[in-house]
Image (tube, rainbow, N blue to C red):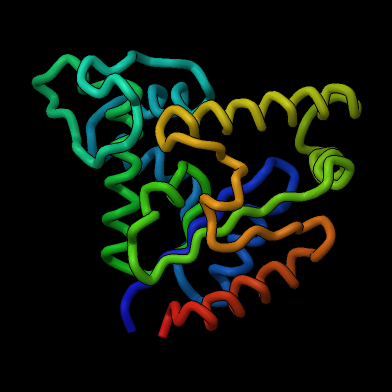
Length: 208
């Protein structure tokens, strides 16, 4: 069996990360999320805080080489001024997830991996979303403050993810055409989402 990769993009509060973890456990494969940032830092030698800043929407340094910002797959060497540019930080994360998928089957959450793996065989790209009220409810306890603060956070996070995706992948982060499968976790529930992903893997012949 060839290695397979399941990529999961998700709205905050939709439960996409939970679905990803449940899926990884079901498939008995590794699950990767925020640890990718540390791995990219270790790989490049660049301070992990800089990776966090770019992901959080704070620009570190625009690239002098890649004006469009879209991922091209090339790393900028340490001797060049663009080494710690936003684009190169993204490139290192893309290299890490690519190396991981080359080495083993896995489930990867976030970081525009659906775009990085858009032409990769044996890959299923999933987007998990949910109704607004569901997202607010699931965010309680994770975000301090009342519903007004939670809703403000969710709008800001959606905007951040959209801008991040547009910058490094182009297009619309929530556009269904960027994915192979879109799931409404609020209506389906997490277990049914996992079942739907497994069924889609069967249809596409992934993991065989």
